[in-house]
Length: 311
Image (cartoon, rainbow, N blue to C red; front, side, top):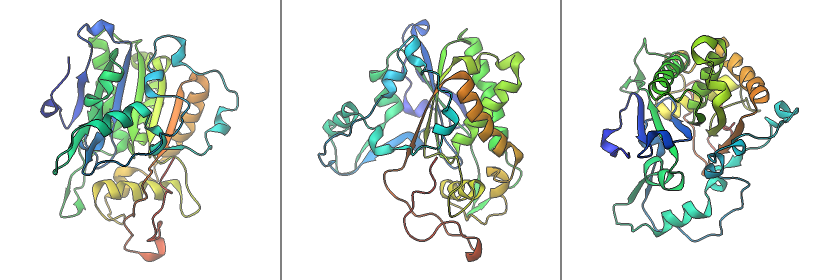
């Protein structure tokens, strides 16, 4: 079963694809966007020009390899895993496998551009024994100002976990392998979900043992020499929502000063070590400009292109 793109919901979970025999799926792949993202737009690639030919970079593993059934879904124990968390992440450029490059390059292109929604257009063909799920949530802004009294990333994480438990329960797939793919501040949602899953052993006891991989695409995980983790999150959220980083409501929604932020970071490292799931982090290959704050003295990012908003 493969869904049409116009059937994808903006809010909540949508099953994009599953095998004709639902019991044939060996892993659930769930995509989580961040503040200002969308379950379609975040994962959509539009090609306007013929891509230049270049040599494909080598990489140690692929998403397809993560989805193989059996022990290959688990990595070997590593007592120093917390230390390795600080290693430099791979770039989005290195994430592209030769096969993906070839498929994208050979697609016919028009003057208006070719859209590739890879969770539907590429992933099912490469990994047919998966159930692919997209999750979405809305954060509303009017005239460049966020509306007050909206759910923050931590409240959205609770909603996501509840929906995921219901979906896996209805399909009787509580113990099916699970891969979480997060973009931008969606990484905060993932970390909070795992923290909540650990504390809710009665309802979510199967989530952590089933988790085989977490893939973080440009997700903030630590501070930089130019600012704290909270500052990085605020700046990244302002980019996604297209509002000023000085917006009064923004800090409440992104939670840069919330206790849950640090708890989620520490818990994630500990759970990574305890449950031995694979973690892959990627950074943007193309530098972007961050929105400058109205108060120059508190500005986190200079006007030069920066890669600082990375895990």
